[in-house]
Amino acid sequence: MHQSEYFNSEELLKVEEAVKISEELVNNFFKMSSGQWLRNRYDIKTAMDLEGHEQVEGPFAQVIKYEARKNEASLSSSSYTLYKVCLQDKAILCAVQRENFFLEPFLLYILSHELVHIIRFSKHKQRYENKNEADVTLDEERQVHLLTFEILKPFPIPGMTKVFEFYKDWRKDPL
Image (cartoon, rainbow, N blue to C red; front, top):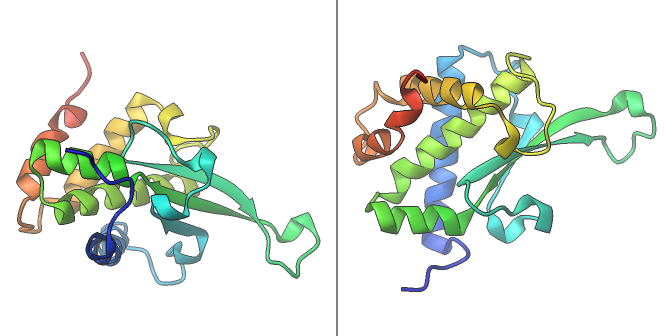
C-alpha cells in the first residue's frame, strides 16, 4: 500500500495534541518555570512545511539549530538560537502501519524525545555542534531515550507500551 508523504487533517490534529501534551510533560519533568521554558526558542514543523535540507530519510524527526534574529534587529548581538523540530511524516506513518502502533502515543514519544534534546542542548548538557540529529552521539541518544521513558512511563497512555517495546534497545547499556 502506498503511504502518504504528509499527515492528513485528522493526523495533524493528533500532532497538535501530542505537541501540547509533550510540552507539558517535559516541562514538568525538568521542573522549568514559564520563564525558563523554551517555547519561543523552538518550532515544530511537519513535512509539508519543511525545506529540502530539513527532510531526511530514516529518522522520524530531527532537530536543526538555527541562529535567528528579530526582523527589526540589525546587530548580531541580538541573535538567538532557534531549534526546529522537523517531523518526517512519511517515516512516522510507515512505522505506525508497519509496527501496528497507535499514532498518538508514537507522536507523543517522538515529540517528547526531541524536546528533551532541545533542553539538553540549551542547558549545555550536550553540545550541539552538528547540523542534524543523525550526527548526535549514540551515548546522547541513549540518554535521551532513557529520559523520554522516565517522562512518559508514569502515565497510562493507551498504546505506549508497544512504543516503549519498540525503543527498548536504546535503554540498554552498550556492551
